[in-house]
Amino acid sequence: MVSYRTLARRVGNAVRLAEVLQILVKHGFADVINRLGITGSLPSRIARRWMGGEEPDSAPDTIGARTRAALTELGPTFVKLGQVLSTRPELIGNDIALELSVLQDRVPPVPFEEIEGALERAISGPIEEVYAEFDRSTVASASLSQVYRARLHDGVDVAVKVQRPNVSQVVRSDLNLLRSLAEWVVEHVEDFDWMDPVGTVDEFERSILRELDLTIEAGIIERFASDFSDTDLVFVPEIYRDISNDTVLVMDWVDGVRIDDVARFPERNCDPERVALNGCEMISRQVFEHRLFHADPHPGNIFVTRDNVIAFLDFGMVGHLERGDASAMVDLLRAIFEEDAAECVRALLRLTTAVDVEDRIALEHEVADFVAFRARTVIGGGRLGETIETLTDILHRYHLQLAPRFSLLLKSLATIESTARTLDPDLDIIPIMQPHVETIIAERYDPKAIAAEVQRQGLSLVRLARGLPEDVHDLVSMARRGKLKIQLEHEELTKIARVTDRAGSRIAIGIVIASLILGSSVVLASGVGYSTLAFAGFAAAGAVVTLLLASMLRTPGS
Figure 1 (cartoon, one colour):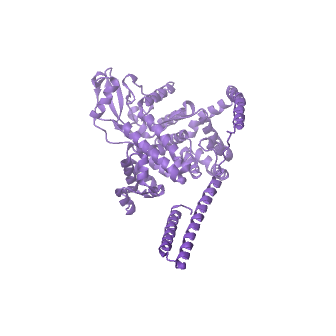
Figure 2 (spheres, rainbow, N blue to C red):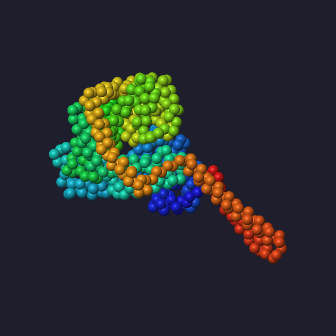
Figure 3 (tube, rainbow, N blue to C red):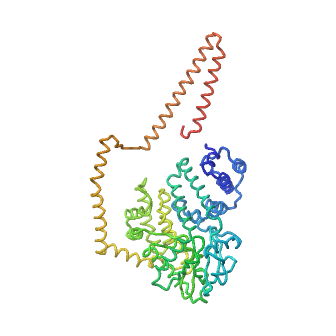
């Protein structure tokens, strides 16, 4: 077992670490601390709860509910972490992901006086120079920022998003803590290796640091405006760059109601079924055409303005697809409809980070069972979300991770379908996606596309052939100088070597113990007057035996 003090020194923030451990214990996760092996030198307030066997303070009894409660109490960084993990059901399971998806990023607002300085820095002067009116009460308050309503001197109503003071320092400190914990888990808990804790923290770090720079969100909104410039079914607010910066974002005010506030649709000349159709169509365009999509389209992030026009809010969580990613999704859907289990597995693995699968045959059998008996019925019935949930369950069982962009994509598709069904329970998202899928298939077999692909592959082969002589020359030169090394590592042989080495050491210690006991017995039996020396030999042998037993008890599998 390792010491809390050792981990605290590595983390660098012992107070925050103690707070995290205390909250985990409070919500019933003492077993997690136990698996990490952090037993020595625990702070008394943690040890009392843990060692005393107290019941968790929190009422929820499911793991997902307790996880959500713990992350909420841990603060803004961990709430954001929970929101990111909610998009990774193949890592944490669908039940926990569903619980984390309802995490509310709402906190009491800080006083306007603490925000005012950031506003004035963005415009290099007093607020009155730019804003004719500024409502000092918050419209929305989240862990990283707060939103206000204001009016410019030209009469335009705007939303002003302002980052909370000192939030960047808090987030970066918690990120350091998370990284240290992830590295510790990798080193000491083999069961979590497949989850890639460090990689998950890296993904989360990239996500939250993007949210801390509001100029990135401004660029995303402007990209969305450009992507939808050819339709009047989506309203994208204009960004006012001259009075915005990395901590303040000013954009057009969205005059609308939540997409699930159906009672107010008549006053805005909106039809629920048409709005649901528009929302799914716009997400399909984002995924299959623009390859930049809103990753959290729940009802609170979609407003309806007038005449069935929708507006997406909060562009902090977005996803981006690479050129071949939409094609991979198309291959997966087509394999399901054609009931081709092997092709379905190949397409599914293209969505993951896996290089190899431990039991591919078993995976193919399980996917084949799903494709043969459930897939067509589920997808044909317009239940895309259920299909996604089943596939991520399969990935979870085989310890396969979705690539982060695909995690966001599947979460986005499932969320928009769920949101649309609150407006139209009979909605089927598949026919809405179908024209976009057919377009991608048609483009794939277009002669120009084939010629371009052949040209790309040909250039790759030319580059490989051009560099091959130099690579061969380098290898031969290294071999001549005796610097060419081939390193082979067999995991099981390494384990056998470790076990053999440990057994050899213990045999040697056993021989030493036997020698001490035998020598001391001979001296004592001879009666030559060295009884003190004999008893000292017995004591030394006893001490060595005690240490050896303690070592064996500490070492798993001994």
